Image (cartoon, rainbow, N blue to C red; front, top):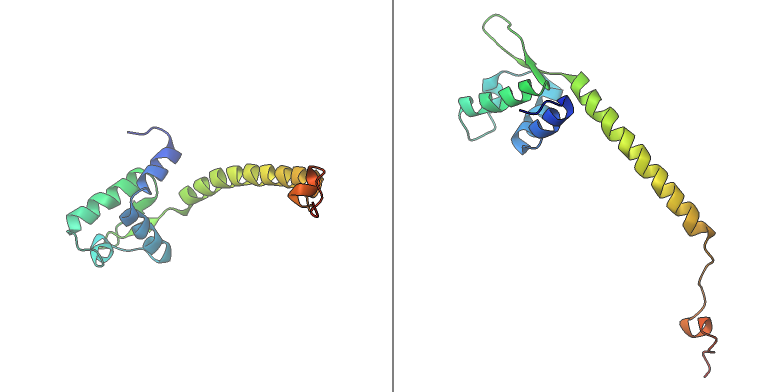
Length: 122
């Protein structure tokens, strides 16, 4: 079992079915039966996928009378966003430094022969 919460989240989201479930839960809470509807799998298989999302902290379940809807925990997505944004900013700073270096380089609009001191007429 992964100890790092962020690793558990990314691991849980590595599966396309679980990512789809998260996308659907972002719209509205849903029961296991409701989540299972579009898939050609058993309710038990969807329940197992939902358990992985719960273990990662992405989803919680509540009890409403006979229903147990799953609820997306947006604060975990915020944790991911902070981590991703940090590296996005670092990458952007590298690109800006590269742009500055490229801007400081002289333009080579001359023909290849002119660079070597050979005229195009020869």
